[in-house]
Image (cartoon, rainbow, N blue to C red):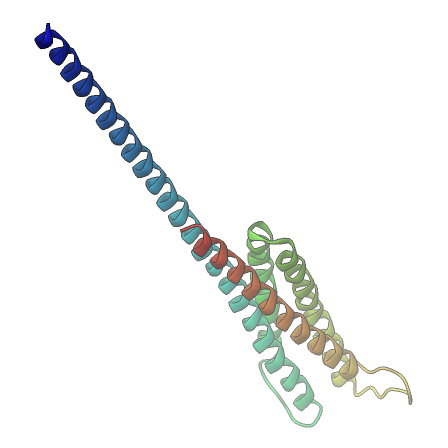
Length: 192
């Protein structure tokens, strides 16, 4: 009888040990699955960050081209009042093309967000789209040798206002984009 009790006791111990091992294995598998899910989420967030960074950088590159070409065109127009300057029409066409390119990349920024960055990109695009008409007005004004009345805003004043607003919006966009990237980075680091 003692042998039967001992046998049953040993069987219960073995069954308990097997159950404990099964539970430990299940727990280890669950932990491994959680680690894999966390790693997948981290990789997805890193891909999102890289994609967003590329979208922002492309938009800024497009804005820079418009801004740089606009500056060159503005300088040429100003010089044209005092000296013969060639290539104004070609550069004006480049500014128009650059504004269209920026218009294409602003949509990607709008999709990436967040809302504040998207809104500032819209405002920046509005400023960019004001450059060609303002430059054309300035060019006609300079070509015609027009003089403004005292206290009247000249196309030169208008050009500087548009350009100043553009630079302000550009600074605001860069700050907001940097903040959005920092927010993604914080989420990425806290999710590890």
